Image (spheres, rainbow, N blue to C red):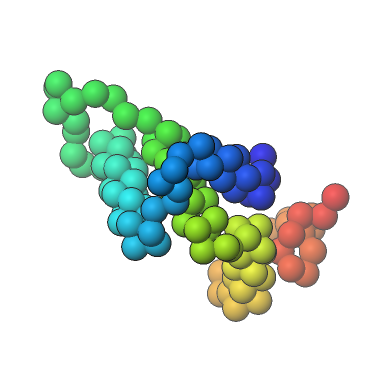
Length: 118
């Protein structure tokens, strides 16, 4: 699924309700809440803090999906095209950080912008 399709699907879902999108500040707080839930699951799976015996098993992928949903809500509320925003971000990383990291040997499959050829 493309980011634009995700944004359209979220918009269709939200359009069912009179309340519509929450205000941007509320969405940012929701995003922080969802990020905290993801952090909790990552900590339980890979960190030093085990779950309590009666605590239900969480799902890292579902928590990431929740974050994507809220990001799409915020982008839609603000009129931001996530595909354009992501393309601009990747361009920034490809130019600003081009020589920051040690390239892997044998990556002839990448073009000058760091994108896979073919």
